[in-house]
Length: 344
Figure 1 (cartoon, one colour):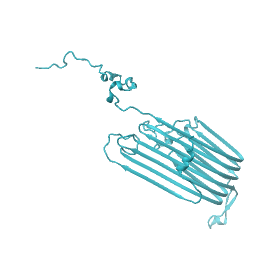
Figure 2 (cartoon, helix red, strand yellow):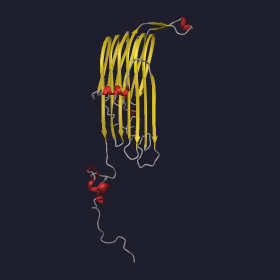
Figure 3 (cartoon, one colour):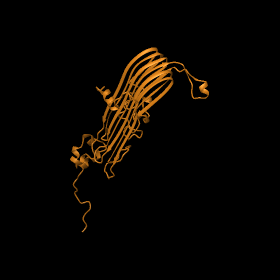
Figure 4 (cartoon, one colour):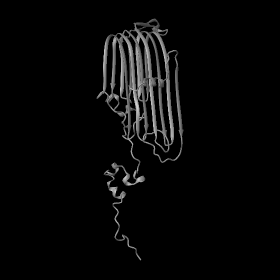
């Protein structure tokens, strides 16, 4: 793992505090288009035309503090590019919870007229939670009608389920507590993907996933699972077999995402269950960087230096052997008589 990448991701997602509740959504869209003729062709699957620049930057921040005594049910889901998290909990009794969510999605396309096109995407989600739950049967009155005179009985043991998936890296981490009588937990999730694609072409990026758990579970079940795919997502192409993969084409749509490929031949698989009263501390980090370059010579390479300066792979190519005599002039034979005699 690159030293300090956790700090870099935290800095990228923004510093998180628990002093007050803040809900902010910001969206920025900058689009500059130059309408002009161009000799450069638009790559298949691109969203903007030649000679244009487009940038989208979406950010979301939430800080929350809750104290309650009764019944609670919470659901949280966030997806940025090819990273996603989900957090679900319910139970009756007392609840004291503080949580934060930071989300950012950056998509940038730069398609200049006379140089290489570039697509750059960076997506990040960070979720932190400090929760204390104690189970107790509850009777709750609702409204001022029938249920005011006939309170509702809630008798639900505690459950909390959290998972994070990074489709760019082929990583899945899952943690679940259920049937618990008490839960005291600190949880932190960091998920990030970066993808830089230059139409040379060069694929370069990283998928980073982290889950930290520190908890005490009383009379319940705790489950922890990790799955890392053995599939190389760096060289994947879209379904048409031509369009190079970028964040604009979801990895889930390839038909070979983590749900189908990781189970078949995983490189990492962890499955843990603990029943009863447990204290669990776990820090899991998976980083999958990749780099791929598939450069090719400009056509025609022989125009600048002649046939003999062409790469050996071209000279030995069966498709070009028929052209050898033309380029090295060995096919030329001086005529001994005029093909079309002059008529007087």
